[in-house]
Image (cartoon, rainbow, N blue to C red; front, side, top):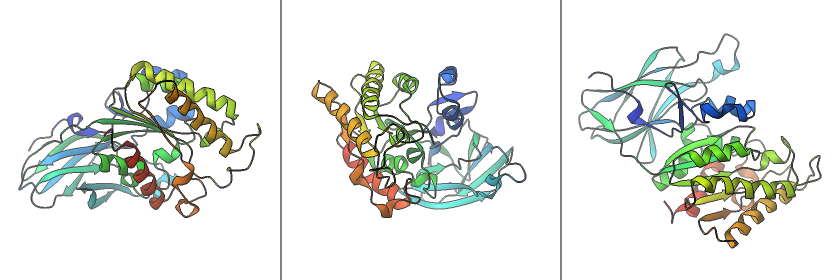
Length: 327
């Protein structure tokens, strides 16, 4: 079978820069901090989803990827393509990053709908999809869920892209999660809210705040005003879209320790939640608040900040419960 164009099969995509899926508007990068623009070039959460006819023995993906230079610490990362069906991993195939390569994933008998979670570190770009011994077609479109956050949303310390909390909740809810998590970012950057307002989506989640304790230190007053402004900007493009605010999860070192401006993470979290509840009281009945502090315990943290796989699973369950009525 000849190669099929990849775009109809791609999910989790936001914007495109040429043939590359990117996670910030390429026409509006100049207003973003450099670190967010850099993270936005990685295809976090981008997947290939398809329906295979019975008798199809495998799927092949033709792709290009960045190749780490000799001595680059990323050379040690395994380049894994994970095939999922019905909420579980069927198989994984490991390959060496290459400028041009093809990977084959064998399918179980019987056909059905499948998802291929792509490796992320080498920013692979899928250039073609084809079936082996059968036929396949793009999977049915699902409601798009825009998820903006920091490194926790991006999936840090999850052992596979499919284990991040947006991926887990997306599977449970039958959504197409678009991962807009930026490691080190999500510090209340208002241009991101404007970009989000222009991006089509049926649900939105905001999960940020921990980087406002130290990386870009804030006060509760500043964060309270920023959350109100952030939601107001998003509402310009999504006036009635269900919007879930998840406040920062547990960070033991920051809970009662004051940052350089005198604020603890506990105080920042309360300011965020208060701002959102004020907007609800003022009439935004499609805005939901999920307090982050009770969602994880110390046993869920891999490094005192980022969740391990169990922590991502717990976060995914909590967000699934919060959004169940809207998905």
